[in-house]
Image 1 (cartoon, helix red, strand yellow):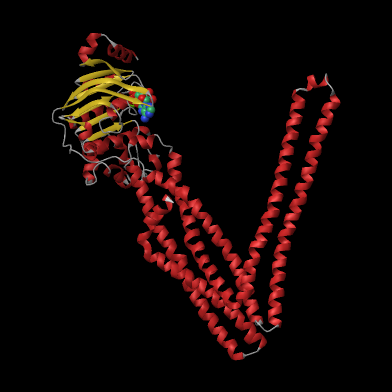
Image 2: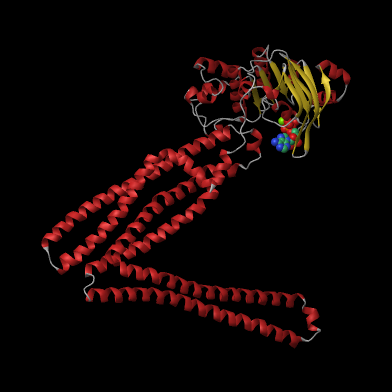
Length: 567
Ligand SMILES: Nc1ncnc2c1ncn2[C@@H]1O[C@H](COP(=O)(O)OP(=O)(O)O)[C@@H](O)[C@H]1O
Ligand SMILES: [Mg+2]
């Protein structure tokens, strides 16, 4: 019910289209009545009375009725689908926005296939069900109403007698149906007993051999006989059921023919009335089936709507708080711990990074480096402790303003299936071509000079035209364009050769001279640009200091460094 209310609240602003669809459905139902009356006059006035003027009139009426029918069909066939397409258009947009604005964790923990399926399959089933309800159900409903009216008008006595007969017929049908079901079930059960008996016999074979075999044989005879008996009975009642359906259907026809024929002979109704009645009855039976099937969609549509609501109701990020305008003093991690699914990812981190400082984070894979830096742009949430950015805690800042000033280059590069220009503009929508080329140059993305259409070259699905290193350089060019206050490099140069990496690190060093940089790297050769190094092990900071301090200390960093020098 909740789900239907949701659909109603979403559809009601298209009431104009829904009213048009209703008018169309009513017109369609009405023209069916028109057709029945034309049939009646055809038989009575043309076939029996042989009135030529009536024949002409009937043709004109037929054209008018068909014309109205087309208007009705158009209205119901277009107005309602149009309203439902508008609804789907909005749902697609709202679902997309809901995903875009969801808490990052909520998307990560969900199954990608499931999200895609909700945005495609479920929306498609919604479309189908809306069609079944809004077009088929609605118009056939009016056909039912009109046909009942027509039947009553043509011969209410015949109609009432059919109405009385219907419950009798359905009752006897359900009676035979139940007997049929009971015997079919008994047959299934005796088959199950049979299989179980065989399997037990085989399992206990050796032991059975040493006991009374004829005892077992007799027992099996009983089981086997039951299978035979129930099988025969089940088939018998199948046949009885099917023929009872036929008998009932034919007795209904016989009844109508007898009673109708009797009334024609008596002069109580005309031949035309009788045939029009039969025609209307057939239409009614047909429409009732549609109405019934349409009603089923009220049930089908509910779980579909619920799945769509899952996406619409994804927990959303709040974008409110203090506007972040750039780092003035420092970032301070104060007793920061993080647990995900019971695993301690970060343990009691205490760390301060001064504005303009360049920090390197070093450690084995899985030690928690990426998680530590992802806390800053709130890509990872749910930490304990505090992270101060200048005098305010991270959570007090307006998220969008924080993210505007934080840039990240990582191993994962996202390239749209779009032009190189648009792939860069996402970092700075108002950038000029000159600025784009400048940024590409700083990122040593000289390969773009070879692209046939320059900035207009389409980079292909998932950037498939580019190598890993080329993609990484595009992501670095984006960072020069975005020009953030705080730059995070999470192994962001790992796909590059040493020479290119050094060139780019030099550019970064110059460009972000006054900015704060947090750099995670395995290449200890580029670590000379940093002021401070922290070493992480199992989510804990185990060493901290300048390059020379850590070398002197001869601890973990020293070991990493000497290993990397030798390798
Ligand atoms: N979203 C997540 N859900 C569960 N575990 C995670 C998630 N993100 C990271 N981890 C786990 O946290 C640990 C640290 O990961 P990460 O910070 O990526 O390490 P690093 O960057 O040092 O290689 C790993 O054991 C990883 O499996
Ligand atoms: Mg990592």
